Structures are given as C-alpha cells and as structure tokens.
Amino acid sequence: MRFNQVVAKMYVVAFKEGALQAITQTLPELLGGEVGIAGVSGGPRTSFLMSETEVAQSLLRFPMELFFTHPRVRRKDLQGNVVKISDLLSRHDWHRQELYQVSREAHGLEEDLGSDFRLGDGSLVNACVLRKRRTFQERDRDLFTLLLPHIKALLEWDCPRCAPSLEGLGLTRREQEVLSWISEGKTNSEVGQILGIATGTVKIHLERIYRKLGVENRHGATLKALEQLQALPQRPLPTQCA
Image (cartoon, rainbow, N blue to C red; front, side, top):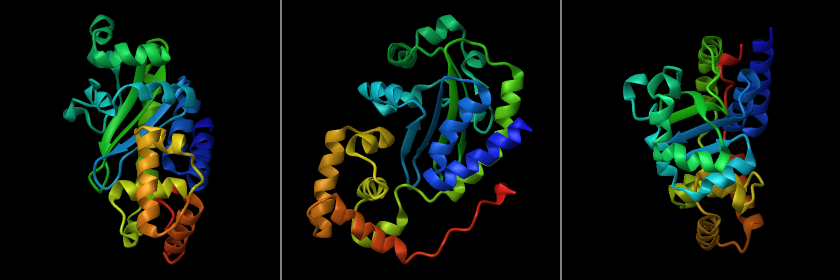
C-alpha cells in the first residue's frame, strides 16, 4: 500500500515540477536514503538534479564528467539493473576512487543504490539514492526495481529540458535548455546546478539569448518562450500512470 501511495505522489510531483524533481524526491522517501539523484545525459538533453540543494551546490566544485567514472556507470552490461556500489567494489577499493574521495568531502555519503538505462531518444539516465552507510538490503533493491518502469515512463513523457519546441527561436541546444528552465522561474544559480554548469556560464548563455531574441532581460525572454510554447498541442499522459 505504501509503495502505491509513494508512486502516486511521484506522478503528482512530476506533473507539477517535472520528472527529475519527482524522482529525486521519491527515491529517498521510498528507500530511506539521504539524497536522491536523477540525471539525463546525451541524446537531445542534458540535465542533473539532486534532492538536497546544499549537497548539489557543493558538488559543483568538480566536473560533471567525474560522475561518469562511477563503477556502475562504466559497466554497460549492467544497464537496466538496480546495482549497489558494494556489489562492484569492496569498501577499500571504493575509497580509492577519485569520485568517492571528492564526493565524500562534499556530502559524506558512503553507498548508493541505482540504475542506469537508455531512453528512446538515446539519452542515458542515472537514478540513484545515497546513504551514509552500506545498509541497503535486497528488499530495497526489489522496491527500486518495481519503481523503474514508472521512472522510465515519466522520463519518456516529460518533454526534454532542451525543449525541441523552442527550436524555432534560432537558439543553440544549450541555449534552449537554459531558456526552458528560466521560463519556469529558475534563478541562474539553480539553472547552473541543474545543468551542471557554472552560474557565470548561465549568465553568458542568457546574454546571447537576449541578443538573438531581441529582448533586454529574462522577462522578455520568458515571454518569447511562452509564446512559442502556447502554440503546442498538449502532451498525452504517461501510460504507466494507471
């Protein structure tokens, strides 16, 4: 019963705030971890979100590329499976990894349970929940596995943050991503956190967006984006929402 309630809540959050936000909130709630992470890279989109803002901001100190050195991410044969770090590395070997050493300083978390898989557009998804100790059990893996079809359905449904619908504005793919988030009221710092880029880089993208759209500020850019989006048909609901 609790699983169904948490899944229903995940869909509600996804419809209001987007799939990534829903996933990062749901994983810790369902599995009892400290931090939830959801990332989409490659294909037509690149986005990254963590459930704890302070942790996410501290992790901006090192390149996003470092996440791709994760022992689970490097194992393509494990895609689609729910895997713990402890399935792959001993505590000693894990502590020797650069990813651990940097992230340990940032958030002090020891273990994660997660899955990597491909979406229909070719994007690689990373979804995981982190704990301070190696305490995940097989029951946790089973719950995560049951949740996976819902995570996939929401991500396939949730229109990419690179917003193909904004292509008619003459912006680059990254500029479309930035404008999409800005039009939802995100600050430069929040956009940088989500996309894994520096706040100053977001500001540079915005200046280019303003010039291309012939506007002077984020309000004018948002109006241009909304005008473009209002002409689009409504999205169908995800099939897993039954």
